[in-house]
Image (cartoon, rainbow over all chains, first blue to last red; front, top):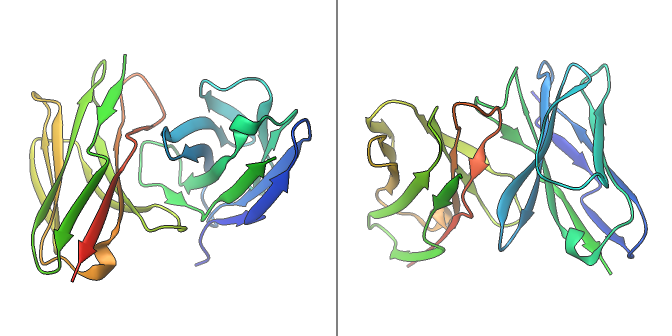
Length: 113
Length: 110
């Protein structure tokens, strides 16, 4: 059974640009959640999608958005990038909710210059 | 408010035992998770506690005291491959998202 796949693995952007990250969950998993990980803040919850609908949202500005497709694959978009957006973005999938065992992808390391 | 505290870094020797503590202050409680994350890799699930007491799983054990808002992860017979970050995460009752601590980076030396 394939794990959670995130692409790309590394990304370098400049301030003001926008970026789209992709996540393919484990087959059969319907919940996909996104986290931002930085050395000082740890894992911060961005949002969760279930059946193509955003079910929960963290405390991030509207520049951070996402969506989920009918095959449960999810994308995350960050517009008007800022230096502080440099982080590891992790995607996690689970069968139904985020309050069960999560399976994480290896993440996308985003650097904003 | 919701707050989770873990030590930032710990060191230990191969073959020893180490205890990683996690304290939390949340507006309720619905379960606590421990994840392991090796550098540059995905976090992987270690344990889940919802009731008080000790859960043992091989060399790893996790303890929970809900009245004290306290948990620990106990690693026995340490191996070099146990060098990693250990993340404590709490599920508040009124939230559908995990609240993660900043993680404890454990270094195991020969």
